Amino acid sequence: MLNPLMIRLSSMSLSAIAATCCFAYPTVAAPSAIAQPQSQLPKAIARILSSHAAVAISSDGKVVAGVSHDKQIKLWNSQTQAEIRTLAGHPLPILAIAFSPNGQILASASHDKTIKLWSVPTGQLLQTLTAHTDWVEAIAFSPDGQALVSGGGDKTIRVWRVADGGQKFKLKRTLTGHQDSIYALAISADGQTLASSSWNVIKLWQLRNGRGLQTLSDNAFGINALAISADGQTLVSGNGDRTIKVWNLSAGQVRQTLMGHQAAISALTLSRNGQTLISGSSDNTIKLWQLTTGQLTQTLPRQSSSIEAIALSSNGQALVSGGWGDIIKIWDLQTGRDVTLSAPTSKEQRQALTIS
View (cartoon, rainbow, N blue to C red):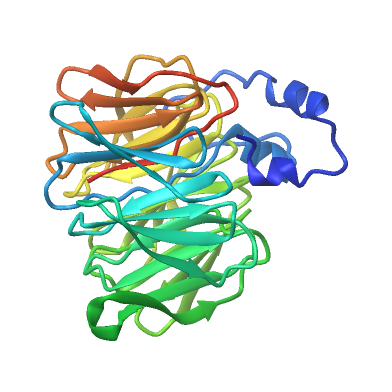
C-alpha cells in the first residue's frame, strides 16, 4: 500500500521517489547527541520513509490485531498464536487500529475517510463514524474509554464521545489549527491532555473541552509518532529526520534529542512506568531506551522490512511489531526472541497493529 501523501504527489514520479528514498544517512552519533540535519527533506519523502500506526493496550493482554492485505484485520490469540477471526468492511486500505481500554472494541481508521468500531468478542461491526473529509491516519481512545480521537488528511481532529446510554460514539467537537495533515495522536494516562502532530508542529489540547494549551514547533521533517508520559509532563516525538525528541512540557522545550536510528522514526511506545521508551524505524530496527537518561539499552535483531508499528503488552514483557509485507511479530523482550504471526505476502502492503 502506498502512503496517502505518496498517492497525492503530482510533481515527482514514482521512480524518482524510490531513488530519493534510498539515500544513505551519515554515520550516527552517540544516542544522547543532538541531531544537526544538514538539509530539509521534502514532506512527501519524510512520510514515505515512515508511516504511523496507532496502538493501544487493554486489560487482558490476550488478543493481537494486525492489518492484513490492506483492507482486512486479523485477530490472534497472543499466547497460542492461533488466528481468531478476520474483520473486513473497509473498501480502501486501513491506516491505523486501536483497542479500547477494556479490550472489547477495536477501532480501525481508513483511507476511505471512516472509522469503524468492531466487537472484539464477536467480530461484529458496531458502528461506522463519518465526519472526516479525507483519509484518517491517527486514532486513540481515552483511558476511560469514553472518548475516541481521530485525525488525518483533512487537517482536523475529531473528538467522539460515548452517548445514547453508552451504546454509540457521537461527534462531540472538531479541533482545528494544524496547517498540515495530522500524523499522530497521544492521550495522557489521566485523560486530561491530548497531543497531536503534523509536519513540524505539535499541539497540546485539553481533551475535556478542546481548549488549545500549547503549540510546539520543530524542524523535525515530519513528526510521525508521539508518546506521552503517565503524568503528562513529558512528551516524546519520533521524526522523519531519524531523531527522537524528549520534550519538557512545563518548559515547552526539548530536554534531549536521542539518535541511534539510521532512518525515519515510524512508531513509539512508552512502558507504563515511563522508564522505557521503545522506537521503531524505517531502518528495520526496534530500539529500547532508558527515558530519563536517554541511554540506548537494547536493539532487537534487525528485520527484513521497515518497522511500521509497535505495541507493548500490559506487563511490559511482550512487544508486537508490524512491517511492510504482512510481517507481524511478537517479541519476548527478556530474551529478544520473536514469533511471526503473519508471513510476507506483498511488498506493497504495510501494517498497522496493536496488542490488547
